[in-house]
Length: 286
Ligand code: FAD
Image 1: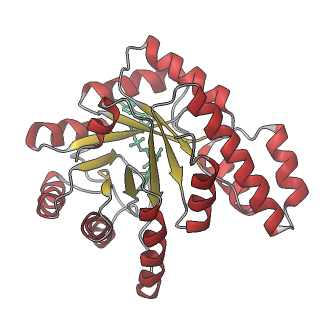
Image 2 (image 1 turned 45 degrees about the vertical axis):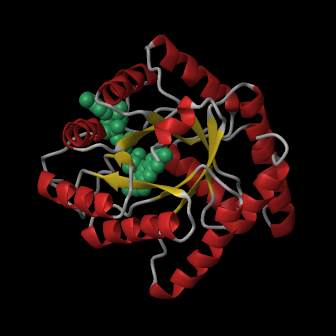
């Protein structure tokens, strides 16, 4: 099933993001995680993609295939393009089609000094156009309510996002944020720019103080004072921070739902306890 069809139905979606395990021995854990995640009946599960290196991609596709075949949930494969040429992207597309995968989150990937880029795709929108011309995948794309770190300002960010949507992106998944007002302002700017595809907020429930500090720095995310107080107070009390982190994420999610969001994309960090707790908190709501 194409993810874009879920949004056409008008239903508020719930989706999860997971990453493929790095080590063989973690493969059993991912099965345990998927067992729980699938029971929570998400509309789809997206699988991240390591930056550069074809074995990473194969692992992502293998896991996506398992999600579809064994757990009967629709998968979305994240696919980065900076380090691949057209021939390699064609090969991934062929494997995905053979695996029954219909949805791709088309990404550029981060620029890395250790992995040289190839020149076939400079921006995600280049791969979106390429895939749309040749294949029949539903294409999702990334968006950044607080702008991508490389963008000069939100005006150029939205201008470039519009190009990605015009190239054929059907759904946008957002970078994490901790202040809903930022997301609402961003959505309004998208509306003014005539970006008319669903913009799905990405929510990351915080369970560790080190994790949030790293994410805030990496993603350029604002860290609201009321959330900062929680993290500072409970930094050394694991269970307390888990409770407070879940409550904070739930308050963001409920506010988004009542304000008519098309869906929620939950960064699960492969932790089934997080997904279970969030779903428990909205089981009569979504
Ligand atoms: P683009 O859309 O190409 O944008 C990159 C930058 O270029 C932006 O500043 C944009 O404004 C600018 N730009 C775009 N088009 C143009 C243009 N035509 N002219 C001038 N400037 C332009 N990374 C991974 O490696 N693996 C993953 O699995 C992964 N999953 C992600 C999931 C989500 C939901 C998000 C939000 C990000 C994810 N990322 C992942 C991170 C992503 O790869 C990086 O943020 C990367 O630096 C940008 O990718 P993009 O697809 O957003 O790039």
